[in-house]
Amino acid sequence: MDEKASDMGSYREHVLEGASAVDLVVALYDGIVRFLSAAIDALERGDEAGRRAAVKRALDIIIHLQARLRMDVGGRPAQALSEFYAAIFAQILQASQSASRAKFEHAIDCVRNVRDAWRQAAREIPVDPGVNPASALVAVPARQIAGTGGDAVARSSWTA
Image (cartoon, rainbow, N blue to C red; front, side):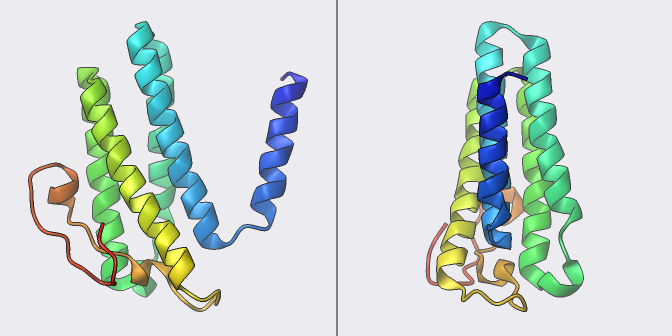
C-alpha cells in the first residue's frame, strides 16, 4: 500500500471514530454508490473482473446492512429496509449480469434516495441511543425500488 492510500485509510478511521450510528449507515450507503460507480467504470473499460469485484463489494455492504437489521426493534421501517435491501441486491445482480449501465445507474439512484432519507433522519432525530433512527424513514415498497410502480408510504414530513 502506498503512502497516500495509507494516509487516506487513517483519515477515514479517524473520521468514523466519532460518527453516530446514522453517520456510519450513511457512510455504508456512500460505499455502495462508490462501488457501483466503479462497476460502471469497469463496464465501460470492458473489465469484467473489475466489474465483478466492484459489484461484490457493493453486495457485501448490502448483506452487512441486512444482517444488522433488528426486526424486533425496528418494526415496519426495518421491514421496509429489509425489502429495499432484497430488491436492490437483485437489481444490482441483474445490472451486472446484463452489463447494463442504465440498471447500475438506477440502482445508484435508489441507494442515494435511501441514503438521503438517513441523512434527513439524522437531522430530525435527537441524538439518543434509545431511539431507533429507522422509525423516521419513509417506507418505500420493494416494487417501487424495482421499478414496477407503486406509492411510497409516508411516515414523516418529507418525501422520498
